Image (cartoon, rainbow, N blue to C red):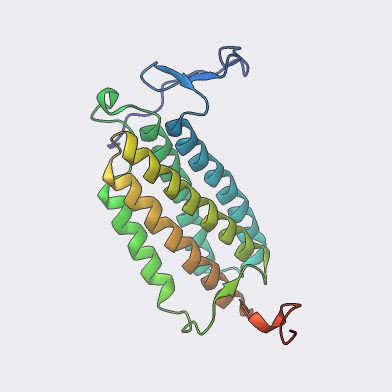
Length: 208
């Protein structure tokens, strides 16, 4: 049995003209400015989900066939659904949340931690910072990591102004760690060298 209510919606027209004045509606029906910090927060989560979709398609092409690839793709797709659940709860004021409202729960965080541990255990020790590159999946996952960090920063600002479920903030913090670990893990899976930061490759290195 589903923990959350399934969506009940029917979209048959893309444009409604209700946002032409620069306002949009929260789940509870409240009209707020489109630059409201709550809108900025779940909008950034939505942006992250789009980048994650790109990473999934890159992984389909980049990674060798096998159980690890199948597990990884399934994990990333699951995270996409979790991000939509996160967006749903962020688009709802605390007083309008109902018991079966989609949201992030502690179980989502625990599973994410288990997924991080599964992949991190096979990684070599880092002796330098890494740069995005080496394969498309690695680069896409670094984009996800940085957008996730931005979502966390914006959500932290929202927490100062309004009540936000603590699991939501904890989840995005853990997810950015996951994207970093996974960006390294796909290189191991491919047998490709990571791109390491070398300060002396700068044009100014060794020059006064």
